[in-house]
Amino acid sequence: MINSKEYIHVENLDDLKCNDLYSLLHQILRYVKDITSAEAGSIYLLDGKHLKFSIFQNDAFSYEKIDEVQKPLSDLKFELKEKSGTLAVESFIMNKMINIDDIYQNDDFNFTSAKKFDEKFGYKTTSILTAPLVNYFNDTRIGVLQLVNKQDNSGRYISFDTKDKEALSLTSHLITLSINAVQESEEEIKKITESIDRKVAIRTQDMKKVQDKLKSQAYTDPLTGLFNRRYFNEITSDIVKNKRLSEKQGAIFILDIDNFKIINDTH
Image (cartoon, rainbow, N blue to C red; front, top):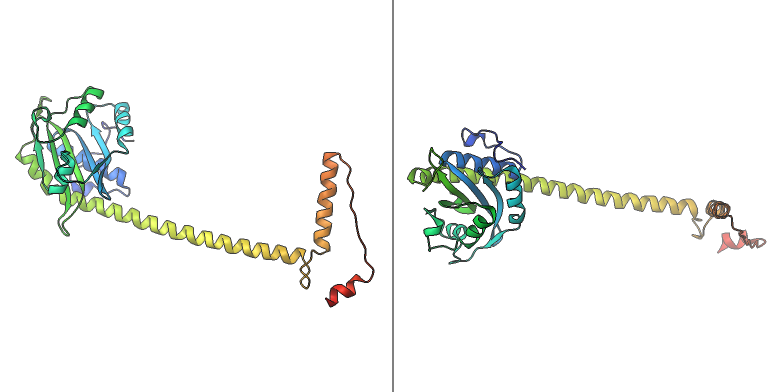
């Protein structure tokens, strides 16, 4: 996990180049927090009919606290249903940026979970700016980005302003494209890996069949399919060896039939 205090400085969106989604989301959230002076933020990505928690950052928390917060949130999902009262869901469904000055003075949305979070971790969530992540080329949404607690130069919590909304609106599309590119790359790698695994499994099965066939040919008579002398010698040797190791007595019964070769070769 990346410490919220330790990150690669991002000058612009062109610097957001990662091969894995987790690292990309870290850089995206750090970049957007920087340009809006937000203390904290989170990203939720579309997962079927839900918005699934992906990442959380808070500059007021230590590395240990961030880790403590993210573990219970890793399975957090919000069902995408209208009039849910959940800020992230409403922003996604309405495809609209929503700005809240103070969650403790707002009755339009359900902030129960945010208030419980504050109580549990000794935090104070005040202002929230939530925006859908939209690909304007095909008008699809892939998730929601949420910023928490804008700070002024003295560190005092203030409301997000028009410039913050404009900045987030301008970057939302490019952020979405970056996430899409990494998701598609990871999906392609997954398909290639699965294809290789299938081929290896088939090859392994084929090799086992060949090995079983060679073993059968080595130990059986090609005409009758009965075990041959090689098999008899090996199995007898193993029996004798096991008896010696166990220090127990044993016996081998051999039945010899005269002229059986003629019958064996004929039938």
